[in-house]
Amino acid sequence: MTYNKQQNTQDRQWWHDAVVYQVYPRSFRDSNGDGIGDIPGITQQLPYLKDLGADVVWLCPVYRSPNDDNGYDISDYRDIMADFGTLEDFDALLAAAHDLGLKIMMDLVVNHTSDEHEWFVQSRSSRTNPYRDYYLWRDPSGYAEDGSPLPPNNWGSEFGGSAWEWDEHTGQFYLHMFSRKQPDLNWENPAVREEIFEMIRWWQDRGVDAWRVDAIGTADKPEGFPDDPYQEPGRVTTSMRFVNNRPKVHTWLNMMNRQAWSRAGALTVGELAGPTPEQGVLYTAPERQELSQIIHFQHVELGASERFGKWSLGRPALRDLKEVLDSWQRGLAGRGWNALYWDNHDQPRAVSRFGDDSPRFREASAKALATVLYLQQGTPYIYQGQELGMTNVAFEGIEDYRDLDTLNWYRTTVEERGELTAREALARVHARSRDNARTPMQWSARPQAGFSGEDPQAEPWIAVNPAYPEINVEDQREDPRSVLNYYRRLLRLRKGELRDVVREGSYEPLFPENEAVYAYRRVWEGTRLTVVVNFTSAEVALPDIAWGKRERLVLSNYEDAASTSSLRPWEARVVLGEE
Ligand code: GLC
Ligand code: CA
Image (cartoon, rainbow, N blue to C red):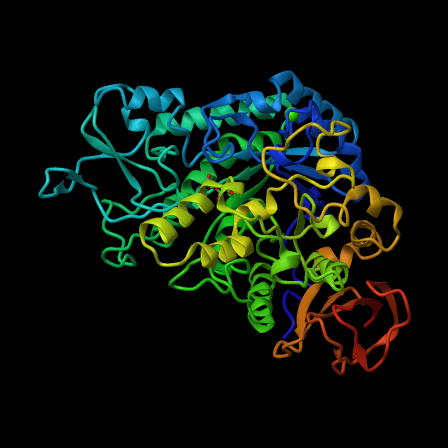
């Protein structure tokens, strides 16, 4: 069972060896003590990212926005959110990054805008306004007994409730696949596409090097807007699986590539919910000129149940996790390219979810997770704080949370439907809320985790995780055994001695049925790399691996010598040898 042996047809691209670091600007670094992270704060910390081993810095949206969804609701594509600074600050960030040899990736949110964007303000002003067709307006499907208009179809939005919002003034509904303050753009309209391509070229001319393309799989809507067959009567859930990944998404990505991205040689990564590896190839095969890479959700969606969706507790079995990750390795080998990630701003912390965040195993498991993923084929994505082993947070009350998705879900589940008690719902929020990833970056053990520098008065916009005295940059920098220094070593190795085998090598899962150990082998031109990781908090037997010639341990998360018969809790071994 060896995949892609010596048959990688991909031309080498600079981003095949690159490491992307994701910054959530609101929570990364506050330079002026107002409790909100900002662009000058990111600029100050670029040397930290360089030293870690990052090549590309992805910024979640920094455009002007009323902040209904923390910047994923853009009201002006050509300006910066006042909380974060100015266009001059942005240019200074670009210049400083380029001086250090770092590239800047911006978030490209073009499935929807804010309802406060000038286009939408025009669009909703009258049915005959030239901007009317920039968005998706439809008549009611009928009227209820009390005379209220019924939505055009049964689609549910990702953030709860119907995906249609009634507009009294013009007597039609508009579509919003996310919040009602995020109306979907009409991609069928060539004028909309032209505006977007022009805006992309404008940022590229300023120096932007790369794009992360938000929710783009949702741009093409099923023709004729038919009912979503997955909906159950009386209980609206998200219609994303019905709407996502339709044919014209490919057409429009190809246009965007040719008319905008390719002109600057930009790296692009598309956020796409729901594709199979086969569809992943369609999105990322170089000859199709769509995207460089995609962020899929298959591994982070494991364990989601019919009843609670992503708000499900319970831990995915290792076998399922391996099956998903291995299928992407196999599916894209030689044909497309993977983005490798655990954490991001929409997910709980992986060390809490897939690892073991108890004090005893937190560090070992954070290192184990990094080892298993980042020696696969693809481009590593590291989310701020992941390199420290930052953990989930359990705030006491729902009023401590900020994420609209969390607040909407809690309100409907506890207050409207009474499906769960406040305590039960809060336990799910603790495990699954997006705010787990959005607490301030932990720079030091000083007040507020040093988020606002030396200013102890500053109140961050969301509370810090109380774990910061134990988990922070300042302490980990000095400690050779820290998670941070392990990440540095792992990335150095990946770009150095292991570069070719990691980039080009075949991928062979070892012991796929084993419930405790994640192991695989990569082979490239006589070099053989074996990765073996104990995915549990107990000592387990070392599976019977057929070792070859001159094999030596090049990285491990345990200091002392390895045993030949067992693996300690979360022990990770990286072994290099010859075929
Ligand atoms: C993407 C973003 C998420 C946002 C949504 C709507 O999934 O990652 O944070 O809420 O799109 O723009
Ligand atoms: Ca600030």
